[in-house]
Length: 627
Image (cartoon, rainbow, N blue to C red; front, side, top):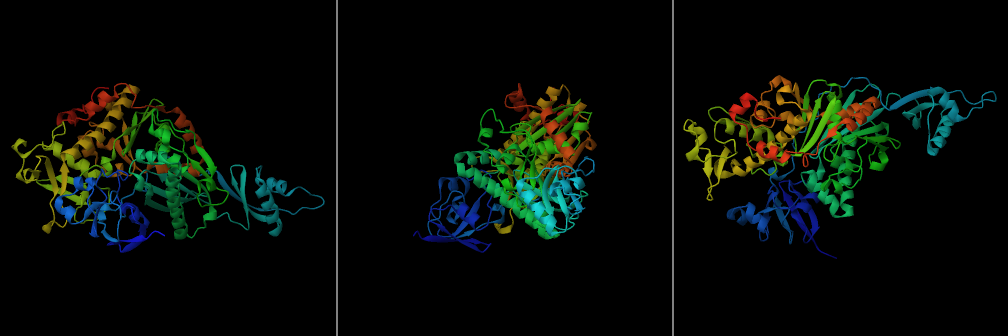
């Protein structure tokens, strides 16, 4: 029998026993700690910083690239690269944990009508028992009262037994014209459904009454699949490595969904057996994994999904713990990386009825863009990269406690920090603010160069000049927040490489928008409305996003609207209306899916979009160039 080693995690005070050779990252997961691994555990991002307080082994080559010599002597290591060879005590700083206080957007703007016409309905009946004069069968007797329906053999047996036991009284539960159940007594008041937005980073679920559409409760969690990588490509790669990996990914999210449903039930005094339907909207990869469909083909040309139509499947087949006969609806897909969440957002915002040119942008690792013009729809997905989620940024982090979320240059650098604590990093909204301010003050050039002190504008205030510093290699960085006394908390810096990551993300979105505008034959100035969707998009400032070219310049702010979690709003609408589902299915088929990787001129457009707009371009609406 192999000896197991004890690993104690501080300050959490949790201990686990693991086999020799187990990675510290895996041991942390066993202890219930989700450590940041944006790179999927490849050792390249440096976000899984931990300190081995006792018995630290020799540093790996990845450790030597991420830590100073003093830090290495103090036991700092990457959790994903270091195996456990003896009993150890590990300190896990808050910044290395995957956001226990992460900001998750659970609200949305919706223009869908409030009419409630769900697939599920309940009918309480009091039937007359059979007589010699009326010897109709049990199901025919029930059909006379509630209308035609279909029932499987199990339900036929159940109805007959329950009718006789309850004096021919009870409540029929129907999904369209299918009999789901026949319940004892009058249960009309207990009829619920759940709607979910399955994001790459977050999951948001809402429970609703299927009688009147009333919102009962909401739950939001971080997607636990982040332990396999921050982006969908990491998860596609993981699923393709071994057959069992797909099931591992699927069960990871199913367990989280089940936990959220349990929490909603307990909080609101509702039984899971009274939840009769669930709807799910997510990107193409998330929906494939949820359904146990291998997403491997999404990771290779031509990025073809297994299905595009919406799926209506027994919830029990997915492993969703609600009523035993309940169904689950998964949104239709537009293309390889334009998924059901985009369709849900289009439904929630009423884009199918918009006549004026309207742009919807969901800014994230995969930036989804939809353009509506003259009853035509164009959609594309662009690999914006994880910079706006805080990954690949030297001091980047997600929007959780300690993250700088807003930056203003007002004589000096002023910041707002989530949780009103000492800043430990910067999240996407703060990063966009900062780069916008650096551009406006001439500290960063349109080409993205962070200027050294000797090249700064002469009129620049000394308060900004002193924040520029150079390391031993001559690399310039900008100090956003100074180190605390004693350097207990290190300074928060912006590096030249960070600016390049912002250029990549912003340029990808900007080029994608330009290609869609070109396909529709219109210019930026023709746009009447720009809709910003998604959790991250709701926190960015319009002026900053326009300054760096992420959003079209020259458009009045009142024409740029935040619509919140539109994917969840669409999932809720589909739960409450079969008509919404029908519209969504039709809409998904009508959209022109533009594959940017093969679109003519995209790479040239992307190269141009990598250059930040000059102030003159922003003011003259040339930031997107000719279309």
